Amino acid sequence: MDATVPKLKVLIIDDDPSLRRLVQVVFERDGFETSVANEGSEGLRRALMNPPNIIILDIMMEGLHGFEVCKMLRANSSLRRTAIIIISGKSYKPDIDKAMELGADSYVVKPFSPKELLEIAIKHMNERMSQP
Image (tube, rainbow, N blue to C red; front, top):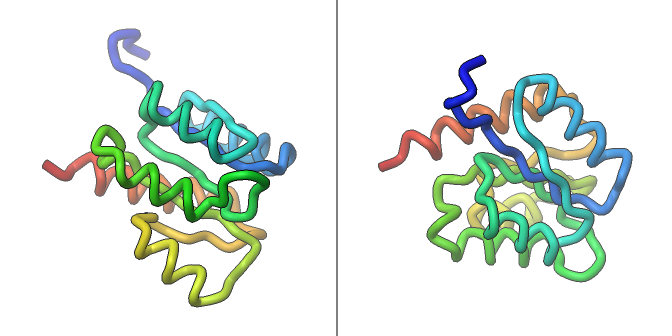
């Protein structure tokens, strides 16, 4: 691989260590550089310090709720080309609608297929990166 080509980056914000690790392995196998945060404020800090191409964001976390994190991420212009994929065990339509209103690119319900999550994330990353 050409060392001058930067790796695509994914940030995983989730308070469940086993889920974080699963998502991390899936993206690393596909060549992504990964970083993780176990709660919302740490995730925000990491995203602003080193903007990723994709953020995988859980909704139900201690401290900052995933919806708040999504709203704050979308309010930052340096992250406008970052795809945000919400993952949640909640499949209620009002939650899905709210996530989309706050700027999420997709909402994936747990349990999910890791391959499907990767495909959805890459699709939305490519759409965001192609925006002017």
